[in-house]
Length: 228
Length: 228
DNA sequence: AATCCTAATATTGTCAACAATAAAGTGTTT
DNA sequence: AAACACTTTATTGTTGACAATATTAGGATT
Image (cartoon, rainbow over all chains, first blue to last red; front, side, top):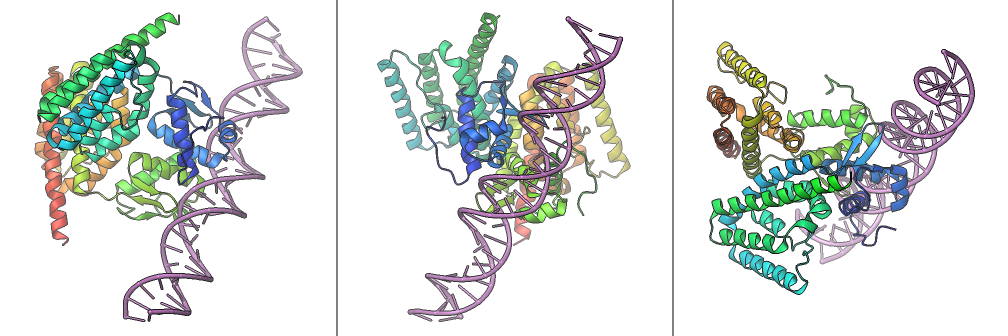
């Protein structure tokens, strides 16, 4: 029932890993829930082999935790882990912004300005509704990261950490954040990059992420408080 | 022939993953070589199942690259990847040093001073021979990282990135680096931490890693040059 | 002799069955 | 009634066999 969009991969295990990742990030498989191998295998119509491989991959991504002879569990988001993760993001994406400022080609800069215009138009047209940029090529942060030119940094942020970050974004951020403020900050960062001001670009990116982190923290504390 | 020290894990696949990691880091399995599942399975006396699981884990650690229907290959160290990795290390371990400066308990600080004294004594006794601190509790960098108190940062650096870093250290660093200079730098970093000077601790750690990176770069370029 | 095509071989991907461990259920004892 | 021990059940870990893909070897063609 779940594979509405099934992207044919070279191998089943890749396919399953992708689908499981999406299911977890979107909350289709709830946080903290147990991953039953027989159940999911039946659900996706594969045997346990490739499914296990997919689970091992998700463990590497930090989306599930595994215990020997017991099984896998979807991670449970919590404030401390979020703060820890976003503190790392500050350092890493700040670094990415600095690198981007010294190496981003002009056409890519223009392309990013166009993207921000598109975001702006979206906000104007849809009464400040958040633009859904989950992981795609319209994600400002991913574009900056790729522009860093540091292959290891790109892999780490886009392939290993971003699934979890997307989870935090989706589950709590949107309702409280101010999209227009975020857009202004994106624009300021891009300006700094366009002017090749690496230090400023890093500073602004760090501040931007730090601010998002604080908003998320409030939202999560609030969520805990109201659930008591 | 390889499992001289076999650490009994809860599961075979963990065990194999550990042994494979060590074998690759130490160079027992050469860089760029192909990982043959049937061959290794026979060698370690297990079936292909757990061995495959181990390979998937190593892929997550960045120690091997896998291609569908073709197989896995041990990574090939190269200068660009090293520079990219160490640039990330600068940002992350710099952050760790700063955090450590604001939270490290006194007894841990004293314990680290004792460790550096031990390193000093080792250098005095063994005519500047490099102290082998591969991954153990005697590794200064690992101790700082753990002292950061940021769980995500600890996991990332110690479980996901450190295998590759150890590879770089082992394969090229030792012959060219000056152990006494490194020790002095470690001491300066620890002094800053002990004085709760976070900014300084970060600066010194970044400079320390940057310097190691430059030495490694020279060593690797030299290695390439002499092999032509 | 070199290149292309085809057949044989080997390796990876997947599956289903078995073994080992943990979880759930049942009955017994205090 | 609660706690413990034991049995039953279900899940994970592991294995060996089969299917699909890639690599190699050999022969035909230019």
